[in-house]
Length: 178
Image (cartoon, rainbow, N blue to C red; front, side):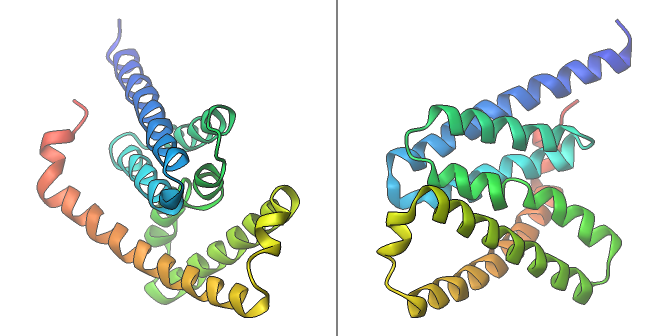
C-alpha cells in the first residue's frame, strides 16, 4: 500500500470517529434540552480539529455527515439545527476568511455569515417549529434574542481563536495525526 493511500485511510478513519463523536455530543444536547447551543459549539470543536489536522474536503464531510446522521437519529432537532446551520461549518469558513482578509473586513464578512445563518435558522424554525416562535413574546424578545446571538457569536469567535492558539502552542504534539 502506498504512503498516500495509507494517509487517506487514516484521515477517513479519524473523520468517521469525529462524526460519531459529534453525533454523541449533539445527542447529549438532545437529552438535556437546555444545552442546545452549548453542545453545538462543543461539536464544532471537532470540525476545528479536522481543519487543523486533516484539511481539504474532510472538515466539510464531517460537518455534513454529522448533521445528517444527527438529524435522522436524535429526537430533539434544535442542537442539530444550530450545528448544521451555523456552528458546524463556521470553523471552516473562519479559517478561510482569516487567511485571506484583514481584520476589519474579516469581521464584517463573519457578521454577514451570522446574519445569513440566523435568517435561515429563523426560516426553518418558522416553518417547522411555529409554536416555539409564537410563544417567544413579540418583537422586543426577538430583538433581544438577536442582540444576544450577536454577542454570543463574537464571544464564540474570540474563544475559538484562543482555543486554536492553545492547540497550536500546547496540544498539537499530543494529538497530531502521524
